[in-house]
Image (tube, rainbow, N blue to C red; front, top):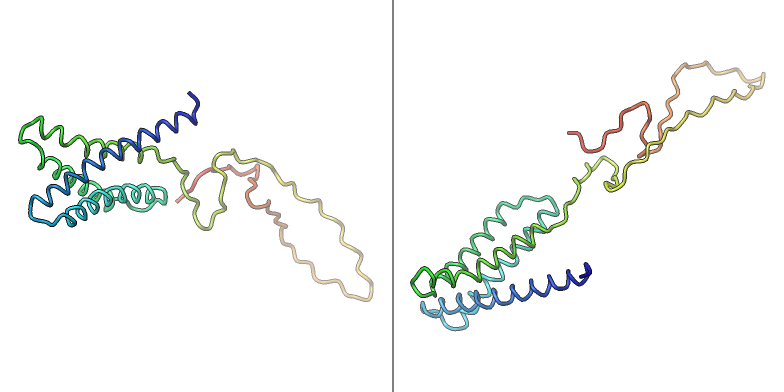
Length: 192
């Protein structure tokens, strides 16, 4: 099987599990709401709010991880909404161990699916500090040296113009940005 075919099969399985788990969870939350006195449309509104909020929080969690932002609150809310869905499914089940277990399957499948999808987020290198140049982290830096240019003799000064006073300052020649000097150790990464 080619990688493209495998990706397509995985996507179809992901969508099938997500659709079935979502349908079961929507139905359980709706039925529980209606059983406890809510009108039919509010039962569907509750189901949409609980289930889509869990999906949105999963996507938000992934986006925050990519952006290296805190995920604690979002992860807590995701667990809370998943547990709320699980509670609705178990409450609608036959009051037995097997009844509760079978009713919990859609929520547990959804949680497992979210965990697998979120754990497949691509690993990103640490972001460079704002004052540092961006570096291509996949390629090894090219180590080159810049030899100082030889000093050229100064042009003769016309005799009518007095020569300026000589100031002895060492000439400093810096390599272009991003080029490491051979006499200095090259450090990859961010030092804080």
